[in-house]
Length: 172
Image (cartoon, rainbow, N blue to C red; front, side, top):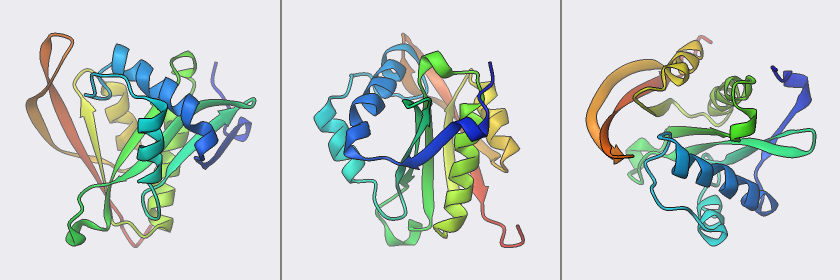
């Protein structure tokens, strides 16, 4: 069942969202390859993480019927000043709400926010086997720029990661 855009509220994350953000992320750690983290995160860890996402690199949460069902973020790519206009994107959807169009809404949101925040480049790292995520990012202008072979080890095997890039076109 698809969820309509009008049924979703997206807002900046706050400390009150940390338990749900942590639950969604820990499920991804334990059961998927969207992240190469292998140890679950604590509320304290995610609080520190959220406090590091300020200014050009925020975290947003998506609510459906008063339930936090997904979150997304822009993360500083590097602490070197020359990379200040580049961010890495992350999108995580609660497992019970996957396949309902939330990833689509959040990638669109990230691209729009990147323009608003005057970011020039977005990067996405997508683990092999997630062709749906690659197609989703392509829909919003991300291009495949390479594949990093066997860079992560999870669930007993080495995994490739596709690197995708979106560059702001001022004509848009």
